[in-house]
Image (cartoon, rainbow, N blue to C red; front, side, top):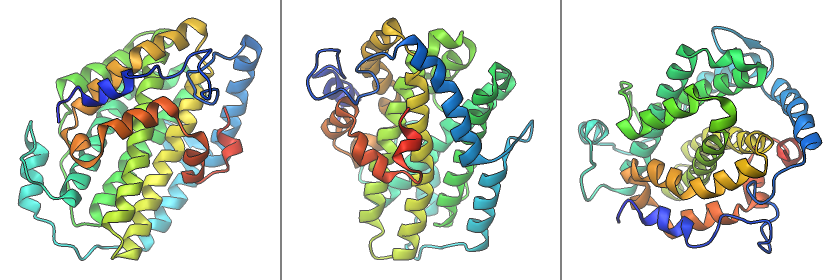
Length: 304
């Protein structure tokens, strides 16, 4: 599968336009009016405080997240599936994955490589002082930090420990672009990257339910960890949407196939695990009701 397949499937039809029928719930469909956009920041900050608890800086600790992680660590779950660790690490460190890898190996490699990008993004954002942009940015950065810990715990359920290597040059460039340019310039790119991440975690949950059906305890733990991350990604999409005016929404619709191509093309596991046409359709159509059902919070909290 070529790395342009996902991009082509997204571009086959516009993500959403003002006149597009049946797409009013898509976050890129219509920009919000100025007054609504101003109110959304206050709503979102209250949501973060309720969901995450108090934020400590510079430790990036969130009170309620720490409690949830402590609960998970107190009841570890371990899969009995045999994982070829040497093969896993060889492919994790390789620029291109080998052919013929089984679905579970591809699944775990994809989680590990997403974690690599998340960790790099956190490190760059912290170094750039992104938390100084405001309380919401500090909370989002802390949440991304927790995502790396959740994915680390997921891999640990299969006996996998990884060293955090830097992601590819393309991923590093995207991270620096989002972190270092003015927020108003990068919000269209940010919402595109969060939409892509949301779709990946949605499909990872579905694939976990299939691959781990014979290990219910492991399946439930893995799905719980992925749902935790998906919940944040959906909220981040809503937050980013509130910062897109008409020009920003148009820019995001234009950039979406390019950003998706950069992200998915950099992760060879995506096209091996999932149908690119389905990924593209999911990003274009944005089934808000189905995605909300995956979330750990009430959809109302995410209706940004």
